[in-house]
Length: 319
Image (cartoon, helix red, strand yellow):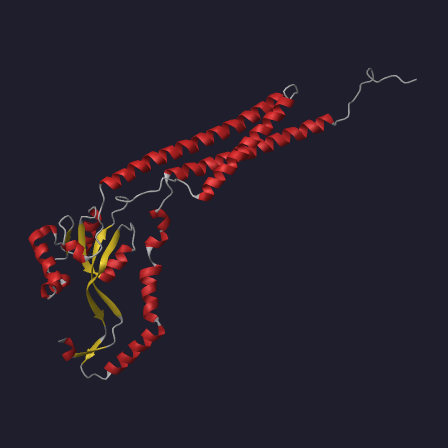
């Protein structure tokens, strides 16, 4: 109908209607019982060996020096090294056991209460647990009302039957309702808005399946206007240069807050944090013990090679 009165340029953007739902997060997910990666385990084993070796060497030196002036100081160094080694080992062991207990409980709960993730509009209509809705009496509502699709009609009937629990007054309210639900409400909105919101913090929403409908954005000019071919040519030139792709990449990909916060979405577990502290503790303990022991040994050897000074009374008489 519109093409009868206006000329359209080639489309510069494609969008449509899609559905947003809150991510289920950690529910239903199975976790690995192994708390650390292979490099972390290797670092733990090497540091344990170094700590034990350091304590053993310090103990041997302590036994040799127990009758000397610095024998007591060596005992303190050995005890410090031993306590650091034992303390860090206990912390790692406790952390592993804590991880095993909590992970096993989560896995058992996930197996006992499996969660089915909805991946399409067809799956959404065939169930009753997750409600869905849209902005009432707006563009999206009119598209569904005028649609000949059996899927759209069935969805519209369900939304009308659910009444106020389905419809909202604006897009912001719909997105807020999705975020406040625990994956129990899906919101139908413009696909571009859906994509952009999913890439914003707190990164807790996702798109369900493909677009429900597709529509295009283009520049309209008066039918038969001299501007029509110029606009058409300019739009083709912009598309050929890749300007539109660069604009899309800038706004939808480069400005994504969820790619930047990928590490925040997968933060270190308690076990990983504890082992980090333990590794630093063992490195600190070994380093301090070795450095102090070397300093003590250096001064002992320096004192042993110091020349003996005699007083006049103690100077031996020579013939």
